[in-house]
Every structure is written in structure tokens, then in C-alpha cells.
Picture 1 (cartoon, rainbow, N blue to C red):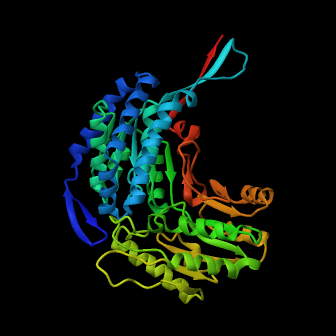
Picture 2 (picture 1 turned 180 degrees about the vertical axis):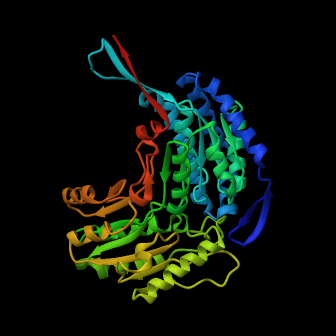
Picture 3 (picture 1 turned 135 degrees about the vertical axis):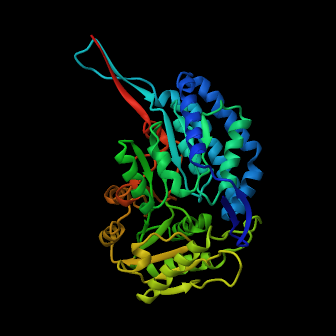
Length: 453
């Protein structure tokens, strides 16, 4: 059974049956059988289907937001925004897939030579709990518009969200088998990856789990896209708009109770404005409201699981023991839910736990840099490489730094975010491959060269 637990109360709210070996094979078979017809539909026909899916998302946005709040603790106002963004993703690819997948004519010794982009087949998406709808759609929308069929193995923490997604596709009239929900225990994922009818894998999750998925996929010679953890640096230079930088850094750090791979996690501040910046973020963090994710006033909901709460507290305690100062938070709440307070750790250094490890919760770590060169050195002193941010009124300088930061994306004077129009992904321990934008839709296609005499 897959058990859904409300992180606000710590109590079980529902149970969902998990599939056995035979049922897993049958579900993958349904998607593989549907591929024959789906790949032969036109992009225009697929677009009609995806737009209907988007319409169903919008029609059920309130109940979907409530479901996310109940299963993984996302504040309902953030959940509503996630539903809207997921619908936008479906609409975006419905609109632009034809342009993204247009034949590319290349000059050669042929009378005509070009590259066309054809679907690979049936894909397996292995998804996390922290953005149950958005991460699903950044896998599903481009893959389906490219003509693939999709098997969706969602996280066991959010079985209700997974079923709700399947229901959305059914209500939209998507042909049977085009998108198949696979409610299984984590131990059964390897079987699905190795199934010969699965052509490729999309995985979002931790770096440790990503290595296991990559190893299994590679042993079967199956391509994979991995979007893994991050320890994103946010560089604040002395000439930055400190008020704006502090506001965005706090927002980035506490969205979804800090449970975001691309959240600003290591705030690197130039010496001249270090104290001023700390005063600003401390004030902003101290006014945030923890509470019931179903209430509109809640700004930070609970963490998704008890083990996540315990691990985050371990990281905080070890960092303080190593010499960091805790100016705010840092103590486990005495409550039934899996809350963690907004926590501010300052005077940090690279050997500390919260600098080296990914912190998945509302914990802000601030590090002092002597100058821009030192800030860049600290930013790149990590095994991760997902996102990064630079704050400076000198945008030319900020862009120079951005080009030297080892990461998949950099925001200058803004928040690091995912956007259907732009590719997203990481390097190093943050994974490989890209989702979204024109690059994402080409991850799971056959770039076929055609040469005509």
C-alpha cells in the first residue's frame, strides 16, 4: 500500500493500493500499445489534447491545491500557482511544439539533407513529491507533444496527487494508454526501468537516487535525463540593491518551506554590505508565518516528512557546532506536524555541513566574501551545479560572473526559476540533460538525418 500522511498533523489520511509485478507490466504494455497510434497523430491533433488537459487543470485548480497541501504540506496559495503553471506548460508546448520540432535543413553534398525529430517510444518518468504537478508536467507536456507515450511513476508520498493527474487526463479525453499512472513501491522501479518497452527515463530527485537510476538505465543502454539536487549560490555584491536582493533571497529560500532544488541555499555576500544584508534578511525571515497550509495566511508550511525534518535539524546543529552563528530559528518545534522554523545561519565557511550538503528546508546560510573574486570562488566550491544568482547594479560585471559560475542556469538581479520557455537542468552532481524550452522537447526524440541524392 502507498500511504499518504498529512505533514501538518503527522497522521495518515489515505491508503492507495500499489501494483504488483503483473500489473506493472500490464500498465507499461498499455502505454507501449498506445504509442503506435499516438506517434502517428499530427502535432496539431496532439495540441488539441494538451489544451484540453490544461483546461481540466484550471477547472480543478482549487481541489488540486488542497490535495497538495494535505499530502505534502504546500501552502494552498503556492499550490494554486503551481496548478496554473502546469496548465501554462501544457499550453506552451501545444503552441510551440511544431516550431521546436520543425525539420532542420543542413547543407551537405546531397541534393537535400535535413534532420527530423521523431518520438522514441514509451517513456518512464520518475517524479518527486515537492512539486507534484509542475514536475510532472515539465516531463509530460514536451514528451507527449513530441509523440511519445508516458508512464508516470510518482513519489509514494503523493499517491493522491498522482491519481488526480491521471483523472485529469481521463477527463480531458486523452486516449487510453497515452499517459499511464504507475503507483508502485520504490523497490519496484528497477523492474520498470528495465522493461524492454521503456525507451528512456526522466528522473527528478536526489543525487544519490539519481546515480542508481542512471546506472540501471545505462546498463540497458537507455537514455536518461536527470534533474538532481542543488546547493545554489546567491552572490550579493556591494553595489547591489540590498532591499530587493534580500527580499528575493528570502522568497527563494522559503518557497515550499525551502523544499526546492533551485532555491537560494548559500548566500554569499561581499564584506562591505555583509552586516546590512544580514539585518535585512533577519527582519524579513522573522516576520514569516508558519502554519496550516490550507490557510491563506500561511507562508511556510510543514516539511513533507518526519525524516526530512530530522535530517534538516542535524545539518543545522552540525553547522552551529562547527562555528556558525544562529540568529534565528534552529530549534525543533514542539508540535505534531513536521514543521521547521525559518532559520538564519551566518558566519559560515566551506567546511560546514550546510555549505557542503543540500539543505531541503527554510534554512538560510550566509557566507562573507572579501570581494567578487572570492565570492565566485565560494560559489563554485560545491559538488552541485543546478542554479545560481548574482546581484549587482553593474549588470556587465554580473554577467561576467554568471558566465564563470558552474551551473545550469544563472539569474541576474532576479529569482532562479523554471519556465516552459527556457531550458532547465544541471551539471556535476545536479545531473544532466535539460527539461523545458526547445531543448527539453528534443531530449526524448530521435534526431534522424535524411540524405537525398
